[in-house]
Length: 221
Image 1 (cartoon, rainbow, N blue to C red):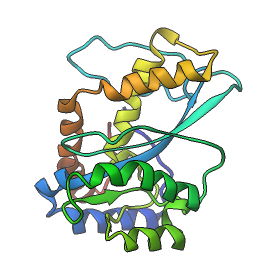
Image 2 (cartoon, rainbow, N blue to C red):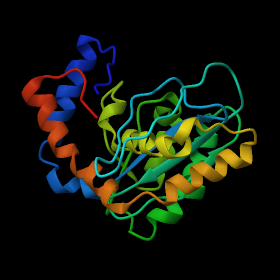
Image 3 (cartoon, one colour):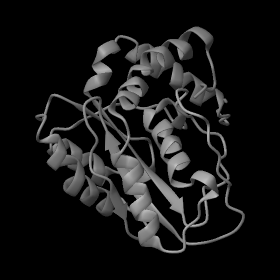
């Protein structure tokens, strides 16, 4: 099911420019670490009942939340060959906190594959594009993959969140304790099948072609 995004002509133009620049990536996508932050509610997902599911299995269902409740926020990243440890975020996020998240979670993982052998992807959120964050990433010799604005559906981790939501909130599941929700999130993350993550990353080649050939404003999951 398509995710409809309100894109301006400028946004569409930047998406096309991004696709044309990255069309030659092909298998280079396997050297990219994709990242994102996501909020998880105790009483169910934020009204998003559209989700990707493994076609080898029976589709499940969950109920969208109706009212307020507690929540936790997480940061995660993954590449073709492995997942970075999940990080639970405290309080309102800003550039210093984001930098701390990268220091504690991204770089211990990335050191194992060597600086210069990978690129880092994050969206254009203010804490990602601030001078403080840019200077920090430059100081660590990290190459940041340019990403088009308002394009979450191009990021394979968006599908990962959907897969995890299906597991965390299966059968209309809700939580009364934050620690119970955290445990469910961690279980869903660490039990993701490597083949699914690899398939999602390799699907980027097709998505890039779709953006160019069809001039599509949105992409299907």
